[in-house]
Length: 97
Image 1 (cartoon, rainbow, N blue to C red):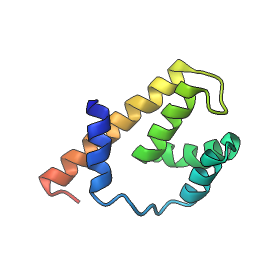
Image 2: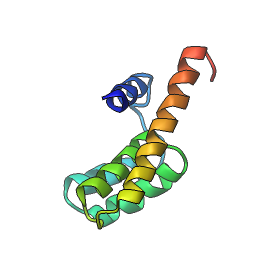
Image 3: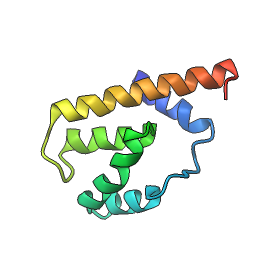
């Protein structure tokens, strides 16, 4: 529940417009069941610290959406999403840019 709150708070701080290439392509691919393309689009963004991409990858591994269930990889991306959300929320509340 805390993770959901953190991600919702993070999203409310202006992350509605994604600037990284492939975000919309990844979402469309995910919606249409093209998990290979979704993985190719979200993985680079997740590796660069995008919390939404990290959470999507966690979800894909946890639900076996186009990937083999891999609890280690799923756990890794969930942990990264939590850490990223914590950093972003702390930055927003402290006035840091």
